[in-house]
Length: 129
Image (cartoon, rainbow, N blue to C red; front, side):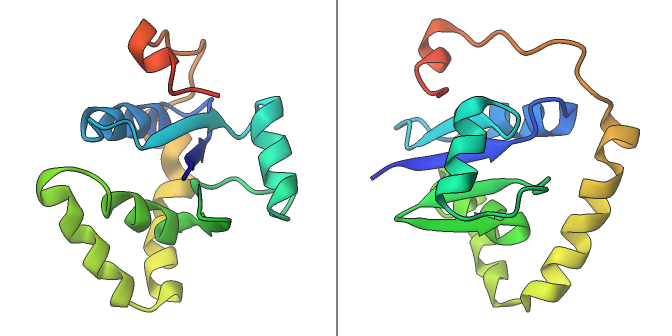
């Protein structure tokens, strides 16, 4: 089963998030692609996602998760106590996404934009599409 995370490749916070996930996913369950990449755009089209999507996305089991739902679904598969936030799925989605949107709308202001892409290690490179 493929678990693919699509992220904003220009966002420092998103890059930190990908690095965070890689470190807590020792079995390599997740693969990664930027929303801006050709494969990212192709996958969004395949899953009938909105064209203007600017969100963290998880593609898993022929399902497409967005925003807070995507982040919490990822937590379910991380090692250690990082599984616990998955319980927050009981919080109504509009409330969860309200807080997600605050971070998303301010991510460039708070964390900046990337001038260049990160250089993954050879082992990490295998996990990028």
